[in-house]
Length: 157
Image (tube, rainbow, N blue to C red):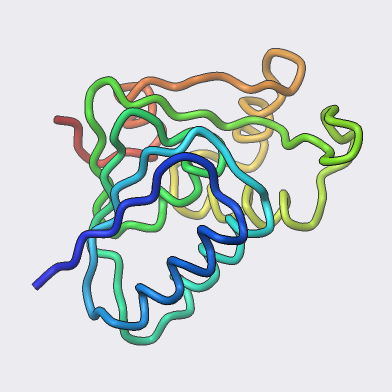
């Protein structure tokens, strides 16, 4: 039996800790995503936890209204990735938590996440960085059909 987990809102340390607790009790799961953003480090920690978990496997992810920013990276963990036709995806440069401005250099966490993104999609690192840097680093919102063209989404309903 596949267990359903839902991650909504904003990704932070609490989201990471709660997810790890729930993950230890299942073998197969579906992850429903409705996320507009979050912090880089908890997002990276969740991705690494999912990648390295020896028992629990994410059979599919489902993008609800939003799989933006941190939500996009979590959406990519599923073996099968399904999105609603109105799901929005956002790939953008990350903001410095102190200055609230786009960092001039990629952080180690941002590098990890963008390489992970490229490994799960059809985009090269160069193309992914170009998308991230559109609109002065604010990136671009992708609709489900465009995200499917890039290999982010497998199926749209």
